[in-house]
Structure formats: structure tokens, C-alpha cells
Length: 314
Image (cartoon, helix red, strand yellow):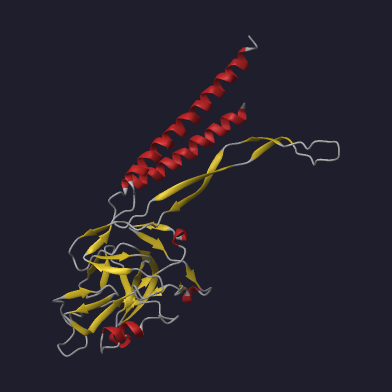
């Protein structure tokens, strides 16, 4: 009798977790680039009532008799299917059409040399330009790519793309600076931002001049379901390297958008919507509710049976 009570309790507890995931999906139905979660269950331990035996000549085999002891959460997966695009007509709203993540970072500036404190992934391409001319996201994290002219071939777009087609294994991205308010008119970087354009390969044209361009890169991480959500549309980047001072992301999928290594292309003037399917979530909510009710009924029925057992003493 106690087994059925504990199985019912495990069913209540884990169906509540599934309902929490469904509720979070529905709450984020309009969150930019949100990826829906999915809960999978597994059976937990089974108690052996009778063991099995091998079949011998003239003797039939005996199958085991086991009683299951309830369920547990097997996994809560992230579904990285593409969300629908929504047009914003804002140049700094950039959607990844296909695989990959933007790489952003918290930075520390020691004079003119920026140092990365921590890396993050995001699919949310709603970017802004701060007062120092750097490209940042809504949380103030710096968008990484190729941000200095010395990394770019200034003779044309094709040369730029070919030169950064394969990112060096020791290049993990740098903050993209579109202008410097303290720059003189003769400097290689503009002192103001008057026009901006971003092409599908990530090349950023500042004031229409190629030699003042930057390059947005995309990281096609091969196992996105392994990422940890951190909130604010951010994911934790798995780092490699044992030395705490030399831990960086893997550059296996890090490169130019739509360059042939699996990275999606960029679409300026659009954002990726949540991939939550409300019809699926409402169906899952009904299934979860009925599962919860059935497990609650198991508990009340087991309690009634215990009551009948206790009443035998009267």
C-alpha cells in the first residue's frame, strides 16, 4: 500500500515540474529568440517480487515479477528549432537565419586594451551602440566579432570574407567599435555614426566606407541542447583549457555567417520570435493536468484502502 502512495507522490511532484516547464513556455511566447523546453519522464526503481530463472530441459523459464516505484524527470530539453522572423526595419536588429549564436562578453577596459571577463551565447540580435561607439546587446554586453581594421582587408567585401573565412584558433573575438567620439577627422575610425548597414555575411558598413567596417561572427555550437540558460536570453558558453587565465570557447564553429561551415546568414531589420507553439503547449497542459489528477486519485484511493484495513480492527 505504501508503494502506491509513494508512486502517486512521485507522479504529482514530477507532473508539477512538467507543468512548470509548460507554464514557462507559455509565459515566453513573445520573448525574442526564446527556445521552448520539453520534459521527459523515466521510470525509477522497481522492486523485485520474484526473480527470473533460466530455462532448462523439461523446465520452463520463470519471468521476473516487479513492482514499479514511480517516475522521475529524465530530462528537460531545449528545442532549438528556428523561430519565425518578425520585421522591425531597424538596422541593429539582426536575426540569425539558421544555426549559430552571437558571442557576447562582459569586458574590462585597461586603457585601450579590452579584456574579456566572461563569454556568453545569445540568439537575441537586438543590438545597440553605446556612447563609446561599441556594439552591445540590451544587457550592455559587448558583441564580439572582428572590430579593428587591422584584421580586415580594406580592398573589398570578397577579400574581407575570404580573409576571415576560417577564424584563427587563437582568435576568440573582440568588441566591435563602430565609432570613437574622441577620434579626429583623419583617424581610421569615424568620430560619429551617420549611416549603418549589415549584410548577410556579417559585414558592417559604417558611414558607407568599407575600410571602417567591422565583421559580425556567428558561433555554430554543435551541441546547443547542452547549453545552460542564464536568463536575459543568454546561454553559458562551455570553456576549454585548464588554466583559469586561459579559458576560452572552442572555435570549431566560430566564423563568418553563411560561410559554408553551418552558420546561418544574418538578416538585418528583423528579429527571431519565440519558437513556442501555443497549440502544442495547451495540449501538453491538458495532458499534464490529467496526469496530475490521476496521480492524485491514486493517493486518495490508496488512503481509502488503508482506511478499510485499519477499520478491520473495529
